[in-house]
Length: 305
Image 1 (cartoon, helix red, strand yellow):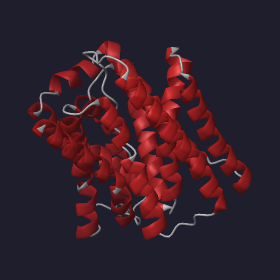
Image 2 (tube, one colour):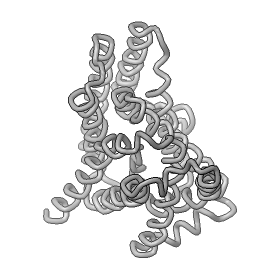
Image 3 (tube, one colour):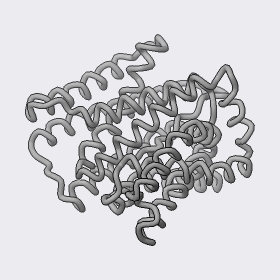
């Protein structure tokens, strides 16, 4: 019981931290999103290089960088960078509400990718859940007369990222270290070129420089919390807790940043929340009716933002 309580506390800390990411990236609104991304990669790399050996994950990093895994991890790193960049830009552009839609829909996108790529079979309730989420996206297209490219980009890049991570078979901390190693060269080049041109944000003033350095712990600490939590919790519990993150993003967008929430959003969210409720109910029912098996794959951590 004590172990589960600690696991729940760690998981809640991780999902809450990811949920309030917009506050951090809003503080860097004067720094171009691409430069923020570069610093996030570099400072995360430095901190993960210390953390991974301490938590016994350095061996999996070396495995992820081996010849047979390298291309898959490079692809996952590219998707992660695209997801991070899109999210940072969305927050700085005042589109946190749209970003939250992407992470609400993401679990259902992952299920759909499992069908299309891994040939997994869906139950009727899962089909209905995906259909409801699809109706939510269609409602946005019709009411706003525009394709909601931002939430779709976030959902697809992270869904594909999770798929590649599953195929690569590497853990959260060791895998992210391998990915940041592969992304480090272009990130360092960008920082160097901006510094040489005299337009670098780092060194401009102390608060901005400290915020950029903080990208390392902001990225790494919630990931370690997640890893500690998921070891002690049932996967069904982790599956439900993942909705804490987009819910907090949604609340920040509407209550703190006063982003417009019109009838089109209300209709879309109605469909999406109904889909998630149905999906969660089906997942819980299935887990109760099945015998837990050893070695079940852990979910990919939602390293949003």
